[in-house]
Every structure is written in C-alpha cells, then in structure tokens.
Length: 301
Image (cartoon, rainbow, N blue to C red):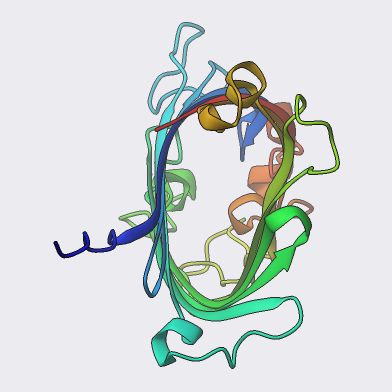
C-alpha cells in the first residue's frame, strides 16, 4: 500500500480572540475604550507562509458614529483586515545558502491592508507592501521576523472635504499618498526556563511607516505632510489549556495581557497636526499618540 501523501500544510492554525483596549485613541476624538473581535489564520506550506487577520473594533461613545452629535450616539465600528505572504529563498532554490548563524531564511514578502470605519473621518484605507523578510531563530524554539518593505497607501478622510475647509479641499475626501518605506517585525518565544505548570510566552510586533506626503496635491489648511509612524504591541501569554489539561491540549485557550504604543497614528504629526492638537477641542489633544494596556483571550482551533 502506497503511503499517504504528505499534507499540503505543515502548519495550519486558526484562532478567535476577544480583547479590550482600555485607552485607545482616535485622532480628533481623544481616548476611547475599544472592544476587539479578531479572527487570525496562519499556515506554512512547502515554500512559505501565509497570515490573514481580521479585526472588528467597537469604540465607546467618545468615538461616535458619523453624523451623530448628541450624548446618546453609539460608538463607531471599524473593520480592519490584512494579509502577509512569504516565499522562502531556501525553499524556492532548494538550498541552505540563506541560513547561517541565527539566520534561518530569507523570504520574499507581499501583503496588503484594508479597513472601513464609520466614525467622523470615515477612513477607507487600502495599502500594499512588497519586500524582503529575514527570519531569525530565538531561544526555546522562538522566532524573530524582520521585513524591509516598499509601502503604498490610498485612503479617505471626510476632513479633506470643502465643508471642513471653508470651501477649499478635495470634494471626494480621497487621499492618494506617495510610495514610501516600511519596516515590520514580529517575534514569539516560549519562556522555557519556567516550570511546566506555568507555560508563559512573550510575543510582539512593531512597524514603522515612513512619511508618505499629505495625500493630496491641493493645499488644505491644517493638512500637513505625514511623519514617520510607529506602531507596536508587546504581549505576555498564559497557555491556560496546557496548565489545566497538559501538553496534548496546548494552545487551545490562551489568556494574555499586552501594552500598545502608537506614535503619529495614521502618520499624523502628533506635535503639529490640528487633528492631534486642536485648541478648540480638548479631546483632540494627544489623540495621535496611543498608549494603552490590552487584555485578551484566544481560542485556537
């Protein structure tokens, strides 16, 4: 009898998560707590990896839905999704030439982001990235990925419409940003030095997006050129199912806490942009810097 063929995916994982961001921000709206429902898919196949993530973020009333201006307004809802796919050069060329020291592989990477938001800005981000990712090994079977990428974004912003700018502006509110650079990094490492009954791990991500212009060739008061954006989250995770039911049930249920830091959110200059510093609206001050604790739970299947 012929042996069964090898499975197409060497790794295939899906997870559903709920998290709560205690002091998220939306530029122009100040602090707003957010509930986040997330679906994440990760797989590895013969030549590379795929990552797909979709978040549904629900703000509190500090970030209301568009065109609602009384105290009973519900919070806005944002849907944000992204994917990243890689092809390893070792696998592509059937070699080990791209592995030495802590470097495990060099990969080609492509990806994209998209969102829809029904708050006052009504963002509709569409972005794409392409570049090279370096894959490193960490202790206890951990991984560190660092990618250098070209980045291109188009978006939408209701504040670019003439009604907000004394008749000066882009009628559609659409923004077409110039191409720029991006650096993305992510890591995961089990804390293997801890006793087996305390399975903790560290993970995190960070991303830099370079200045991408103002998004329009028309000079609009207060619509400044963007600045370098920095977005990061560092997470400590407890594998609850492994603690309760042993290694066979590892990573079925995870509880985690994280710290999120986001400077120049969406590329807005946190020191000069009217959206971030408007004197007429105290809630806007500091709203382009997000610093928040996050608590979450994940169910893996």
